Image 1 (cartoon, rainbow, N blue to C red):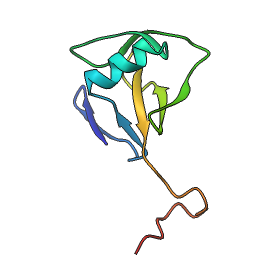
Image 2: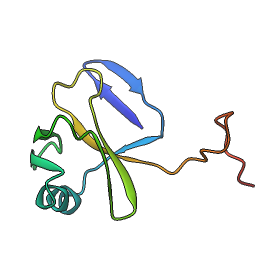
Image 3: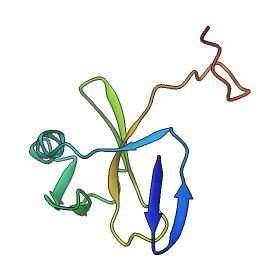
Image 4: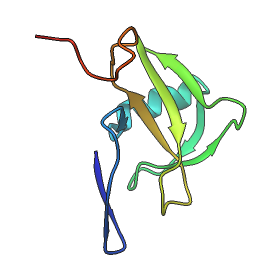
Length: 92
């Protein structure tokens, strides 16, 4: 994931994917995982500070702050091979 902030290019690992779909954010709000979100910028205005990771629709999500942002985002955790300790994918 690449994010450009104030004249600098920040390259984040592909492990996290910011949720941009308002339908998913609305569903998370209706299930009380988050309390409010910005419809234009997709960040979270209010959330339960004790709940930073949750599972919805067979996907893992985290609430994560990124450098240069004062508000957190809901991020989907991409599937990674947890058995591989070297961090490289064994798919061929």
